[in-house]
Length: 391
Image (cartoon, rainbow, N blue to C red; front, side, top):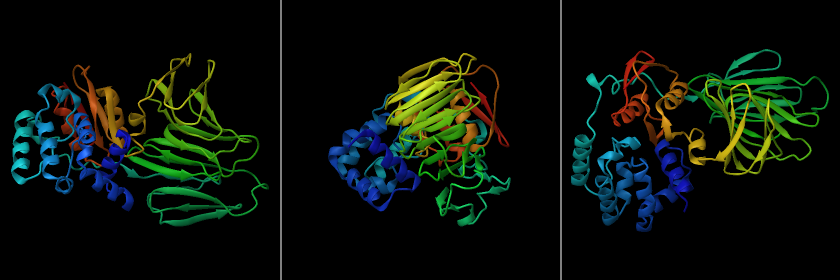
């Protein structure tokens, strides 16, 4: 059992997206005393948001050990963003009460008047997108009923219930003019696309993907702005190319993530499986391997570097959570701004602290900001959909 699998099951349990088999697997792990070490690692990294139902699945000694682990955490670990205010990993009502008292004393709220706590009007993002067809017709996918809504030129386009756009070839694709489609996610939106060649694409918030209605010729070419994760269908005769503002990524068939937001200082390409070639616009390209991340500096020279990637951090958005790994508040707030569709302002000096921790993207923004405030390194004020950041 890998830590990644344990975290995956935990996070999808919190989001309510486990399959029946995965749910059974998660319940079995909670009841297994041999999983104590794995659960303790989750606790150490700020994942301890166990529900009452999960606690009841643990045996008495297992739950007691988890409780002891939590209360033994030194107070300086607050800087690790204690993302667990509403939890109680205990085996009885008395333990739950004792833990609640400990949390209240160790991490009192730094919010004056509860302005952040009561910001319930700002909800997390969801499956929202716009599709522009080759004929110029613009469709609001968010409001569109599920089912097939376009069938022309041998191509059928269907919207599914789980926020996915599916292209299916139904006829002759070799004749006629090839049209380009554009799917755009707004701030606070995400969407999936199954392209005609079988390639699966996940789009993060404030992103767009331009692609042909059918891939013809010697290559499959798409244009990306923002962030997307690709699972490319293999076709050795037609390489797949992702073109973004400062680079081109070329693959034959593989799994990778591209982050090319215009407000970020780098284009980042992270490989999970296979191999890809990253070609900056103004410098020599190179091949990266699984577990590596290329970073193309957006500074006019497009210099490229390769580092070992934190795959859990990279894949967090796709798996519906935030993961901060030695990340400064400005970077964190850019992610929050895109997902919750809010504007961000800074008053006074900006904190230089680096934050670590994890939290579900299904949480209300007030919960996310409260947890950041618990570090005592940063505070927030909310005015409408504007977040003011202060030290």
